[in-house]
Length: 529
Image 1 (cartoon, rainbow, N blue to C red):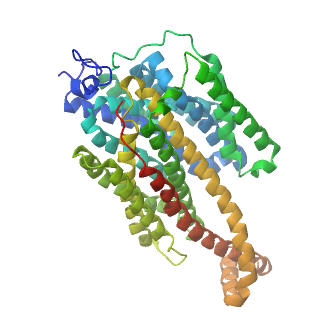
Image 2 (image 1 turned 30 degrees about the vertical axis):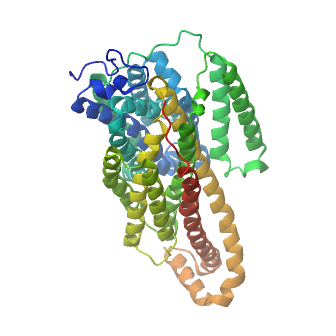
Image 3 (image 1 turned 120 degrees about the vertical axis):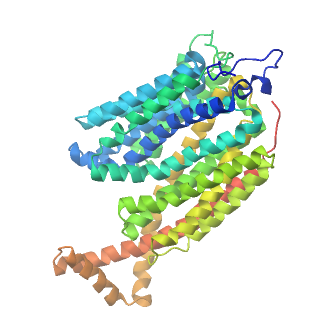
């Protein structure tokens, strides 16, 4: 078959959801893998950019004469716009066509990135970050839908293995890339670096991706009410997640107001969509038990995963005094292990291994890796992180690939775009909740450990000797002896409290998070569309 043949062309007599409609039946192997690379490049570009900006916030604040608190809106604005567009991706793909939507999204994301890099003020930067987030919101679900359709059912495991490599590696490598670009060049290069990647992505999408014939623009009127209610609800919810800990959660009138708006918006949206004949989000997909279970597991998995991704760099930098680039390098073995093992997971699925068994095994291995992290202390060096990272990364491989494959197994082809948008929304909500919960847990439990240590340190430790070490460190940094003595006690209690906190968290996050996922995983069953 020619590589330029429309990817969804039907074969004569094919039923509406059978494998004969799948793109993979109509294209050669080379074309299928070029499609996979094209859509993965586009999706990973957006993920890397989102994560890389985190490490540059202090530099952005200083360069644009703003406080770090004000600079956090560079992140918040992007996340809000991204979260609003995510659940609309299925409808947008039908309205514009998947190929056109992907091209418009990549082009819009790149153009907004260039303007972000040129922004002279914080207000300008936040404005273009909103546009960038909106343009990038449909990249993940649309790319995933195209990839699933490009491969026949028996090859989907291998396709999802390639997809998973990018999705897992991006948030791990991005902080290292962002730190290097910011330190050696400028924070503006975090945005400019998207240009060559997007050119490659656009070239591949233009030449290899085509719309299947069943993608048709809806004949019913646009559901503006549904879109509006969804935008209000999701935007308010994202603000609550992003600003909750900083504003002391429900002690803040602003957070309470945003929570009420989110609840009203999302409840109203759900009621409206269930009664609408032209819904922008297809809740009828939840009639598939496998889809419901897989989507729920994705939410819980990303909740636990992003908790550990956030905690480990903080432990390395704040307690072990690793430079940002070093912390990034020693976070990368997890991604490298995931990348190495994922093809094996895809191969086993292609050989018809039980995906439920693979998923359960991945959860157990990942939990073991998390438990290994709990034995790290302030006396460890970089190499002590290697095996826990590798074990957890290997476990993640056997979690992502089966879960991604099982979840969409019963979904008809014409509903695939709507399904992947809901899965992407669940993942993002899980990550947002995870980051918020563990940020709050860090703040509250660190206070607990400080109070506990203050009562017991004098009895259990050589307090004068330890205080003297901290005082000497501060004096070497230029503090006078009197101020250094006062600061030594504060710094010492903070360090020991934080050490206890991270040990406590690393025991709790991966094993218990995975245990929750495990109880759901064993209930995953196959359904036929």
